[in-house]
Image (cartoon, rainbow, N blue to C red; front, side, top):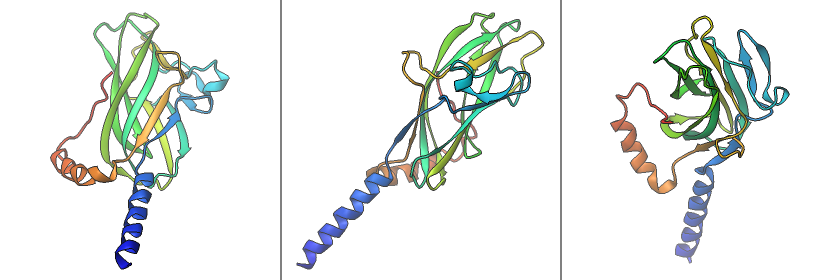
Length: 198
């Protein structure tokens, strides 16, 4: 009988761990994503036709807070698009840094495309040391450098390249992979930056 109760308790614990260590998908950017730009003011994307204002100055950003119920997160998957209107600086790339609760987790680059105005996909995933938000996570994307005078800009959109809503998946490792995750952290301890490939 004791073995039976022990089995039930173990199954309940594992079941709870599986729920706690799941992925949560949120729409980001969305109508309620706040953008802030030095040259174009600040507002919600829903008030700007589903776009952020053009971003061209270091520190320009989009940000939103989500309540997900997760104790911590350690992976991020993105599916975004950026309208690329950078120009007049051939060969240049513009870095966008991604933060969760103020912690840097990755970045992606947007090319100077000669004012092409292409809607460019930004997709990929990144893993990082656990960020303990205890259910609440602030996601921000910040332009890292200023475009030169008359060098154009970028704008984030609320949809992805397929026309669906732009998304972020905030995840944690499954219980069976926690040991591997721990050893992986040791292997990646020397890495200073992680790149989200577009």
